[in-house]
Length: 70
Image (cartoon, rainbow, N blue to C red; front, side):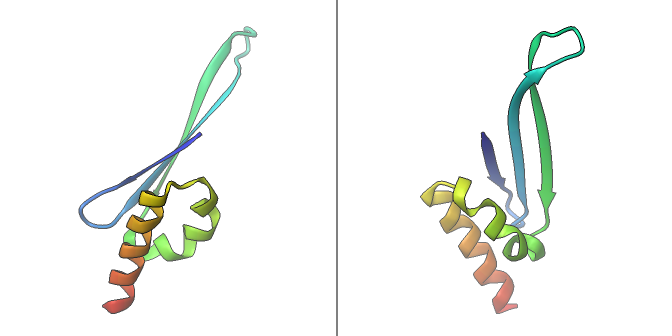
């Protein structure tokens, strides 16, 4: 499961949760986080697009449009 958070500056944080087992064999949640600067959202968008909600896609598109306007 991936979650996407956008800050006021247009940066995007992607957190991915996976379930696995630790060395003791216990089921645990593992988290991976990627912080993507606004200027890099367009480059990373294709990788995350399939996991995004409609609202998240719209937010990313707005950031991309703003970056391309500068």
